[in-house]
Amino acid sequence: MSKKIEETVKFIQSRTKEAPHVGIILGTGLGQLADEIDIDANIPYKDIPNFPVSTVKGHQGRLIFGTLNGVRVVAMQGRFHFYEGYSMEEITFPVRVLNQLGIKALFISNAAGGVNSDFEVGDIMLITDHISLLPNPLLGPNNSAFGPRFVDMSEAYNKQLLSKAKKVARHHNIRFQTGVYAAVTGPTYETPAEYKYIKFLGADAVGMSTVPEVIVARHMRLPVFAVSVISDLGVEGKIVEISHDEVVDAAALVAPKLNIIIRDLVTEIV
Image (cartoon, rainbow, N blue to C red; front, side):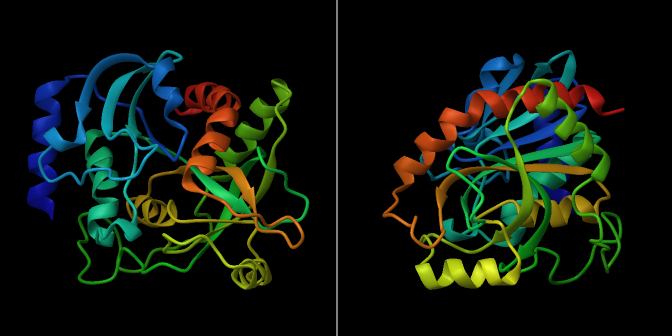
């Protein structure tokens, strides 16, 4: 994998000479942040050696380099999922590449179903911890050049960034929740019984992404900030039939508020 990463990094550096300070992964329906970036380079995934290609609606599939609120960033406008048939190595490969490009922190967003009865559709949930029901992306031989064999996950989500995000949200009068994110394989949405099970495990929201990227980021000691937009509810009495289009639309409505949080938070990376 090291050779593939090196090849990919060299290609990207041939397209832009700017070194990004913060990496951002934009989830389902949350690609609007790209409109706020002063773009230096825009590279479709299909043109990048060894990169997977987004196959899901709401994931445009391009790597954007530029400046956000005066900070050099690289944004993935679209991510990859286990349910698309990609391996965990392929899903997390871009995080390895972003790390080699020199980012100092990774910001991740997603759309998720809320299982906390206090949540409402449209809520922003700052992720404090996670429960993984996906295969671990670090299974197999360990490359010590990336990180240790056994990775501490006692602070998967950086507490300082979380605290600063809360301050930003309060400053802008943006309603937010905090909670635990559970990651499942998808692509089916959960049954009512599965929602109950996930809530019983201790989660507040459930989705089909994010955790593999977080684990690999922490393997490389990258600080992580992550956030979910609650696009539907898995709460007894509030469960309704849901489609992917509705998830995309619900996330897009909240995206402007989330963009404010991320825009201000990038300036806190030192």
